[in-house]
Length: 307
Image (cartoon, rainbow, N blue to C red; front, side, top):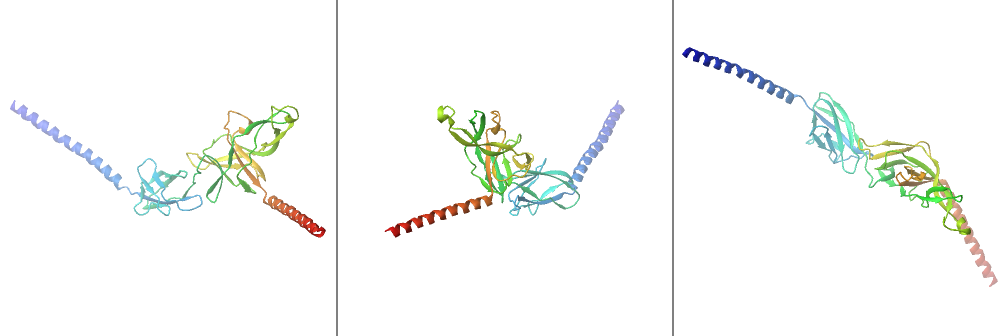
């Protein structure tokens, strides 16, 4: 019995001694894996962020998607330098660029072994102050005139949708670069407007019923193509006319000038003028003013002779 007890004790001790190396080896393997992953060389990303005019943009958050790693651009729009390092392991990563008052941006990069890597420069668009259609130039926005069209009747009593208001925004020669902000991304329409006679008072009778007013209504459609400038938010769109446009009054809308009550009521207007025609009109005005002055001078001279 003593021998059995001793045997059991020895066996239990031996079995216990065998388990210890297994646990130790497993822990050693885990630690080795951790050490190896920790020793894998990182790549320091560097880059520059600007606005659309090419000016450096400070205060932009540059984040590595799916991680807690980020950096902030400095006064020269640079990141990944000095204390603001942006380290990643070799592989493919998505960088996210965010700054209040500007469009966000995303960029896919692939890093290789090395101490540092330059990232292609990113340019962020500034955002307009409010929803609408704008002309963009010199890194500033000029808002198109927003109106809500009304229904009228032509002299033959056929319906027409238009407005009495002319655009407040007037540009020379060309429409320029057209930007839409926070507007519907579907069913873009562009129309050239012409003055159309409509009944002044549809309830009037007799001669009063024939009195006419003039409103601006759709004359011909212009094909347009809209391209998003920021992904994935798609707040900012560039609207490109499908053909060149000459002097005239133009509208961008989503069917409001068609008279469809189910579409958005907003219509945005702009006037393109011909500078040569403006100069010609000014010359004609000056000629008329000179003619009036000559007439007055002649009349005054005649009165002087009579007296």
